[in-house]
Image (cartoon, rainbow, N blue to C red; front, side, top):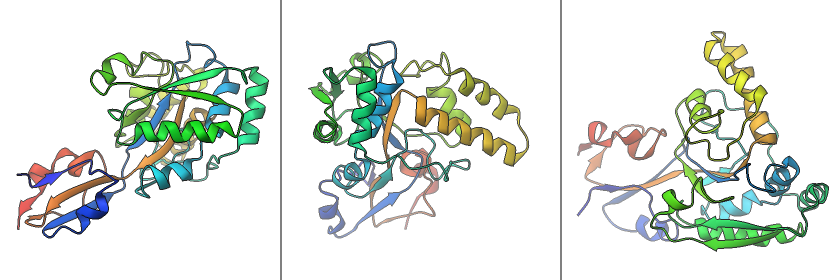
Length: 271
C-alpha cells in the first residue's frame, strides 16, 4: 500500500479521479518531452532536415491525444513557461506540412526514411506519440519508420546512441542549468551533439550578467537560436500528474521535478 505516486497513467486518470479517498493533482512545471537527433549522423546535420521535422509535428494533436490535455505545445527549446526567462513572445511553431516538405526538398531528402526509435521507457505514450508523428509527417511527404525498442536498457542502448529517439526531461529550475546540462558544447548529456558558437557565447555572458532585463534578452535569444537551429524537437511541455491519499496534506506543490520537487517527504504531512 502506498500514500502517493507520480506518473499516473493518463489513459486511466479519469478512473482514478473517481476513487474515494484519492486526490489527483496536475502540476505545471519544467518537465518536457524531447525527440533528439544526433547531428553527427546523416542527414541530421542539415538544418533544412531539422526544420522539416519540426514543422511536420502537430503539437496540439500530441497534447490532446498523448497527454490527454495535461500539458501544452512545446516550441523546440527546453525553457518552460514557468521559468523566469521563458521567451513568451517567441512565435509558437505550428504544424505546417507544406513548409516541412519545402525544407525537405531543399535538403534533397524526400526519398529518405527516418528511423525514430521509441519505447515507453522514455515516457508513457512515447510509442503512440512516435506512431502519431509518423502519420502527421506523411502529409509532408516525409517517411518515418518507428523502431520499437525494449524498455529494458533503453537509456543505455538507445538514448545518445541512435540517430533519432524519444526522450524525457524533468527540466531545471533555472535556465542556465537546463542549457548547460543538455545544450552547451561538450556537455555530457548534450544528446544531439549540437554546437552553436553564438549560443555558447551567450550562455557564458548570461551567467555574468547582473541586469535582469539584459539577462532576459540573452536567454530569449538563446531560446530562439535553439528553436531554429537546435537538434531537438520539443513537442510538448507535460504536466506532472500525481495521485495521493486524502489522508495526506500539503501546501502549494513545486513544479520543479516530481512529487513536490522530490521533497514530499519533508513538506507533506498526515492530516
